[in-house]
Image (cartoon, rainbow over all chains, first blue to last red; front, side, top):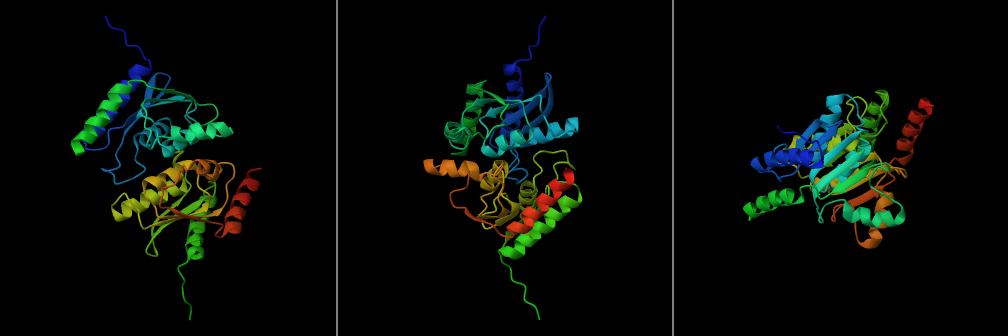
Length: 155
Length: 155
């Protein structure tokens, strides 16, 4: 008998499945899922090359999918799981969607939002919605390994 | 005989035409156009209510339209005209699209990106692409008036 536990690791594994889809399509391998009441209501993987659309990040696709799925533009009880630390565009999308919680895997020091957030917080400013909760480091190694493998293949 | 001059005012007037479309559809009236070599290659107006999509800002729609139009994800010679100062999500989209120049009309102190940029610049950080040029205040009054009329009607 096996019991499925719906925890952060479970849902991040789902985001990693999305990231693998990006990898298989020669896209930078980042994946995301949006979860509401332990149910995945939106999925996305980076498709900037396939769609030739610079806004087609995993998070944007997953957020838009989630809002279309529930027929409402606010995801006030949802958690966004994403394999890599989001960029400012995607954090802005999570802000507008009023996402309750954001969970990511590996840090992204070069284009992630935290390099800005850490400065802004000293000034009582934030790129995040005031009520949002954040968690990082879930399946960090798996997320990082997929990215490293992708960029190693490119060299 | 009349001569059409393709200057910032001309293209911002086109962005205002987009903003009016949003107004007429009971959307927060913000409009945008993307211009390359004096040609409009993308248009957009805020459609967050119509599409129930929190990412459907005028700029995102105009940028995506432009990339689809030219079949490439980089808008390296393009100017984005938008009636109101962009938010961080839209500035992030412009960053990823490598837009060359961003021109806006009226400031947006509450959710615009400049409140963050002004702090970050002290730390040699920026939400903008390093090479981007920015211009503000083009047809500012017209852009602001449309917003005020919209919110006055809501009261």
